[in-house]
Amino acid sequence: MSQDEKTARAQLVQKKYTDMLLKIPHVVGVAVGLEKKDGTYTGDVCLVVMVDKKRAAGELAPSDVVPKELDGVKVDVQEIGVPTAY
Image (cartoon, rainbow, N blue to C red; front, top):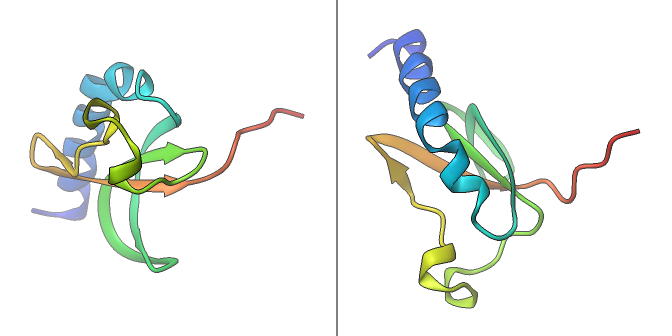
């Protein structure tokens, strides 16, 4: 699958699941972006779920854990803090 096809597929998943993901505590945004591992972008397209603070799965209720994948698209949780408009 080409990068453009992966991006298009991720955009469809974003549209389908954004409302559901934004209802999860600590989720502050959802976007199509690149996976990040150990602070470095891998170049792999994924659905980025932005949170105010990352927490271990054990600290969350099972219903508050962000899925690792949605409809075959990898989900990457990235900590961004609390968005502020100026």
